Image (cartoon, rainbow, N blue to C red; front, side, top):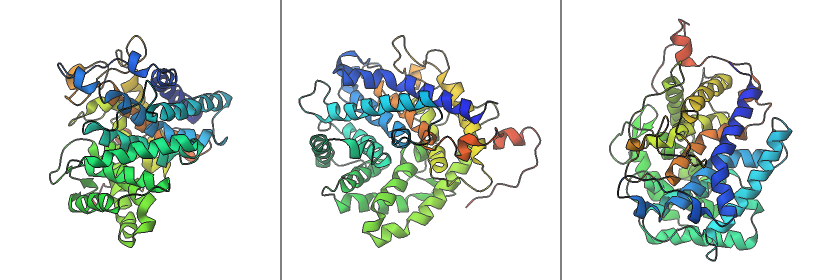
Length: 388
């Protein structure tokens, strides 16, 4: 296995490859003109209305911790990484400015249809994850445009499932921006998700449990950060932070055990075209230094690096111009549900959250280590696994 520095360099290179077409295009006023819109047969015209905000919001939600760390001049692995981060931080701020400017050719759709409720929240998540070097570095005019874009999503009701957290997290970002925010939209999401907790670290997506990865794509990361941002405003919300964190740590333990010795994982449920985004929660627990007991940071790094290589190096993952295609392991358009388009696939970026840890953190600095499945299937004697 490679060293931590080599792994970090690989992660930066891969994230740069994913981000470059999106961020360069929107900074040139060419995102809507040049970005392909791959979608299920017959869905391309409909998805064109949403796909550009999907690409920008989801990409930045994953890049934000790295931009917050390295743009501050701390923790990068080498000079090449520092240069790349400064470049992408500037592009990210430009993308937010263009995407929320009504006069921009790449002004994103926040007002038409239900889908913008989702991707306003991913953009909000990016600002929450980088309060200084994304949110805090925007001009007053851009911040005003962002707040107006977020507030414009309130005239539509989210579905009664994980979508409630999109509405709640958007309100959390407005609160962080010292804008007026809606307590009721947040409380509705919290009350429902407390009812939908199924045990052993998993929530239902609505009243029913689903065998998919939405606990990691959306539910647990957004629930944690909604409470973390707004807990100070309500004693009941603040009191939930400890049990919600305990559940998240358990789900992260299960995710780590899902990674096979070969760097694969069960292709279960919908939205597999989000690829590396499957492991957002595991990465978030690493970023927060709250990994489960008996799970060491270096084993998570090595496991996720193995997954990243399996996913992103598969032939057909990128088209000839560098845009992501629909699929899990390469180009597999049959894995794209009717709500999936090119922009949707950029949720893979949320798997890169551990880049927000400095290069000397044990996640990156410790020697390579086997992960749980690799240990067990090689005969190592480990403690029993237990539910919570």
